[in-house]
Length: 272
Image (cartoon, rainbow, N blue to C red; front, side, top):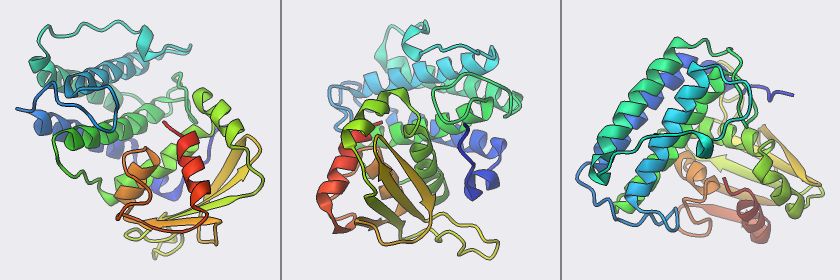
């Protein structure tokens, strides 16, 4: 069963996702020019900047192939052959080339075209949105590796939280972790301090709050305000990076109220 789209996802068209993806690729490439390929990426233990760029370049080419060829059966990036530059110093240009081909392919596809995916939706539109958030988070990784403080535009970050929650409910690699998390009605409330709450805009939109309710081996989520067993308040860019494990929950970026152990367990078991 497909996840229903949020109001903000409906507001953002396939072309919006493609345009934002193109911009994020440009930010990533421009940001690493002149950077040390051997620099360690603190948010991806064991990775260097070169390995991060290699990963993103491979994933972009894999996603382009899935959409261009209308792949209907599972094909994982680890099984997709890619030719790498011999010199890691050439990775930024190689990444830019593959990224441009990906965006061109996505723009040429009807977003409703059936395409295999591992996530909540199974169409070309899924891959435009997925590659946007994949690239955005790894752009943040690269900036952290180079000593910068990343920021994600509020609309993109809010959509990224929606996408994260929709996908981890169905991703095969989170199933065991969700079973280990257990769940018997516990609730988590994430509140973006810089995005309107659901229903707060004149058009009835907005998606600045998320309520998550745990059940045995799974969870449900919705936009809205409520009293959670634990509540986290902070800028939506930081909330997105928190969910992806790129921010620490108990540092200065967030206000946390309630059951901190529940929050820590949730973050540990929903690693993406």
